[in-house]
Image (tube, rainbow, N blue to C red):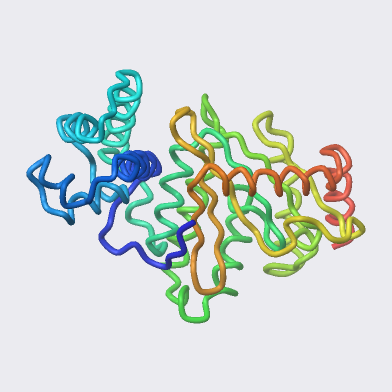
Length: 294
């Protein structure tokens, strides 16, 4: 698990971190130091640190040399690491539209991960998921959260534009698949007032009709549940080498979970909460009922 509020100039990708973790595991198993590894590829100790943390793209000759030094003689395993490195380099070269967003660094990285993902599972306690928000809801939310961070009107509009562009993934030929479980409180919280919220719920009903969207509501009457402590999103990728990444914002920081055991734990929590939620048809009926009540 990684807890961070700013990545600064460090650039990493989920595949880069996965590759770095594999190299670190191999080095530890071989009983080698970072300095010994650095000497093998004629590099500095700091470069090995950056490689193992996924901060820099990796060259094939360096990977081969390190694998030999770590006594990894399984050709298939070495080939898998080389494939990871190639995919990582390709992803780093892609210049995403999100790079000029006003988001803090960790949210920009999340958007980059979402853009590369093929599936997202999200649990929300008090807000409509960002991929389903209307422009007016997102604008009202930015203003209400604007105690210091989003006070500039132009910046707020750019923030809304970025959120709307993220939603384009839902309608492409190979769309992003989204499985959202939302607590009933998110449907009743009057963000932006009655008109804005009514329009938001109408839009949510339209989103629920998409074949690549699964939407369930956890009703108040469900009582306690495994995800009661806070919202999170699980991002999954098409590449079999890439483990799921869990992203969760807190008031003062961002939590990233990037290892198989902890990602699997979050998936289990999500699945258990989904089982306590209303079926999709009943969820739609509840959303429509709340819309009419507003």
